Structures are given as C-alpha cells and as structure tokens.
Length: 260
Picture 1 (cartoon, rainbow, N blue to C red):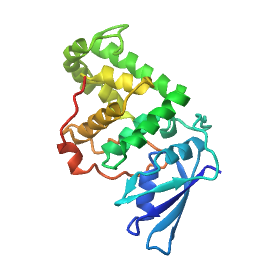
Picture 2: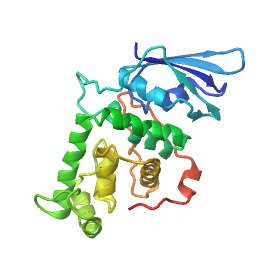
Picture 3: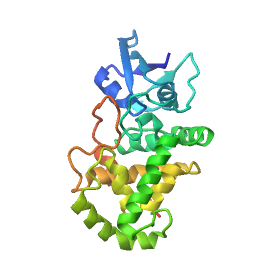
C-alpha cells in the first residue's frame, strides 16, 4: 500500500490543510485524520503511487502549522517512476525531480530544513530524473530556443548574455502567440527568461547544492508575485486540482540569493 503515517500534527491542522501540504508529492487517494490524547493529531495519507509516498517520507521533519511532522512508513517505498495509464498531461507531479518539489514547498512559504533539501538532492542523484519530465523540459528547450533565438537554436546551447538579449523578442512573440498560456506555465516562462539556462540546468541535472534549491524557490516566488502573472497560474499541477496556500509575505522580502 502506498501510504505513510503522519504524527505530531497540530490540533489546528484541518484535513484540507494536510491535503494541500501532501499534494506536492502527487495524487492522494485518502487521508484518515484522527485526534490523539496529547492534543495533537495523526493521519494515514494514502497516495496513488509508491513514488509519491517516497516523496512524502523525504519531508519528515517539515513544518506545518508550527509543528514538526513525523512521517514514517512500515513499508519501503521505492522512488522509481511509475507510468500513468490515462494521463493526458506531459508529466505528473510525481515525475518531477525531488529537488524541484522541495523548491515548490519553499516558494509557497512552507518551512523545510536544509537537511530535507539535501535529502531531496540525494534521492535525485540515486534515482535520476524521470524520462517524461526530461522529455518535456528538452522539448521546451527547443521550442523556446527557436522562438527566442532563431531556427535550430536551444536555450541550453547559448550563453547567458545571449539569452538576455533575446528575452524581449521572446516575450513579444510569446504575447502574440500565447506560448506561455499552457498548463505548466511556470516552466515555459522561466525558460524564456534571462535566467532560462539556469532553470534548465536545475531541472535536467542531478548535480546541485542546497543553495540551488533556495534560488529556484526564489524564482518561483518572484514569478507568482509578478504583476503579469495570471490568476490561474500554479506552480505545481496534480490530478486532484487541489489549491495550495499563498506564499508567506516574508519569503518575498528576504534578501535574494545571487542568480547566475
């Protein structure tokens, strides 16, 4: 069974909040939330996929409503990628690299220790990045590169200074043809931006450091707060369509790390 046990849940945490927190891991089948004698709560969260449960275990020690969650399982959940039978999406939440999922949590204002972020990096190093997600990102590399830089060009093949020069042109074409108005809008816009090469490297390369996750979280949060962002833009896409909490104001006002 693809389930994890969660304890030390705050008495103020609702089932909806718990669903929002774990929806970053992948599609959820069921949440069984129960009160405990110590004024805390516990829950069993059952996912559609074992890989989603594995991601949930990665979050052990994460904070929700001021309490550190204890996330365990009696079963070993392998983080291998499981193919969906009926998905029309180019990829699912569980296909994403774990470092990317960790960045999504930070961008939304959740607190994850650097130890958890390092755990995410180690999982990616061990299992690699799913073919579905890599194919999607490489497709964007080509599509965005052609519209921004010309025929047969890619974002990954150009130096950063060239990308900065092409950004205005790409943005104009994008507004005319609506390339960014897709389900996974963040990736399209981020790769079209002056730091597109850095974004591509983050999502297609397993060699990274904790600071790289913080920088990607910053880019995500900035994208959410940008005036041009549409109301329907979401950082993570799950089959449940669950809403996620707004980023905490403090995240946007902290000193921004250097993005290269």
